[in-house]
Length: 190
Image (cartoon, helix red, strand yellow):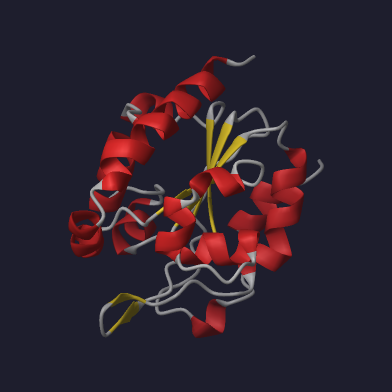
């Protein structure tokens, strides 16, 4: 029986010695997905439930994109591919950054198997890896049209970003409505 890349990822132990919990890679992936959401790493709740974005950040992200839980968790439609597949542990001000091992090891093969999906790059780690430019997250989100060929750029939906959202109301007022249209259109493509 041939192993698929997601099966290999689920068995991955590359970072085991550096993780606070035993490896439990969390992702949702089928090559039929019309949308791929690249985030940072599963939080503790996602790790414990083995369900990506299963926390307040996921609630906000689904609200931002106007996606029901049913559609969001339908792997045939939405792939959920974090920069690191395992929970990295807690730091002083939230979860630690994602491991830099997963994306170079696994992302190219995952992305190559998808058929022209709409890519959403959520947070600075996903944007830094995929865009490799010098702009700040705020500059990227403000000038999101510059990245349309590479992906839609979003701030991380964590409640820790409430201050950023209050300081930048244009994101929810002007950018999100356009993103919602693009997400809806991607889901209707066959």
